[in-house]
Image (cartoon, rainbow, N blue to C red):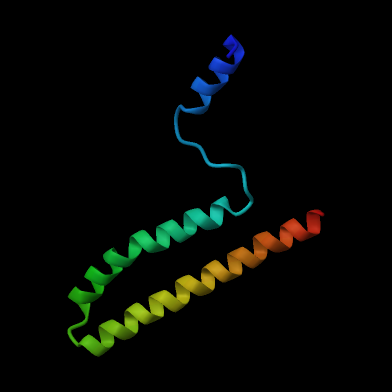
Length: 84
């Protein structure tokens, strides 16, 4: 193994990186939505006392979150198709 190959291997193993993709923002938004679910759940548990209302609020959060991700994914995909 030459010196340049050793150098390439040592650089490749450092840090954390994500391959460039137009969908990286959508992935970040998915992460934010998933992280906010327990926070929303705790908040709803304090604000609403009836289990049916809590379930409805969490279901609504899920529908809104999924709809947002679908719209954003189509938007990014549309930009990608227009660029080609």
